[in-house]
Image (tube, rainbow over all chains, first blue to last red; front, side, top):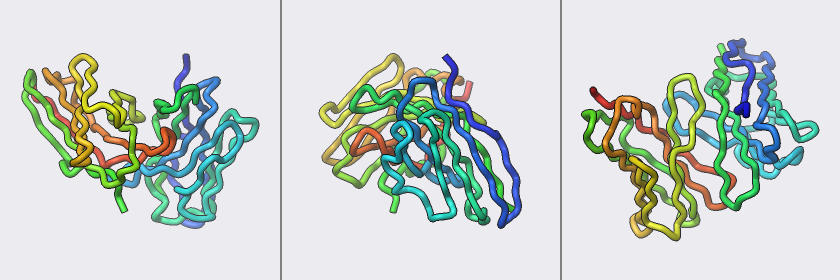
Length: 115
Length: 111
């Protein structure tokens, strides 16, 4: 079974540009999460999809961030326009949602550097 | 405001000895706790969990202890092996979906 995949693995952009990160969850997993880790800090929750619906987006920093999950399969996270403080590693995770407490399976992350 | 804290950024342990990683939390609504292990350039992988109705959960060399009155969680690894060298994250959740993570503790097991 393939794990959670993320693309690209690295992205270097200039301040003001737009970047789109993609996450492909494990097939059949209804729950999809986005997290961010700024260097040396905690892994911070951004948002949670159940299928194509946003269940919780309380962690999204501001309206420069837009997440979508069309058709309830893969998800994209767009940052527009990017700022220096957006640099960090963006992790995606998925879980099947069959239990009350769901173990989340993480992807390898996308390292975003904003110059 | 950080609700899950791992106050030791790093820990070194001799192979074969016990590794103890600590985690403190502030939110009394947390009722499910996990430990994740992370190797460089990889995502975190699930290690072990515990719900608030228990105070201990064991899985092989890994044991997690929960002290609800102290809002403290610890992970014991015994015996420690060089392959255990990684960053360990503590995470907690009030709902089972949104997890709050600590900043991680980098464990080095010295052969």
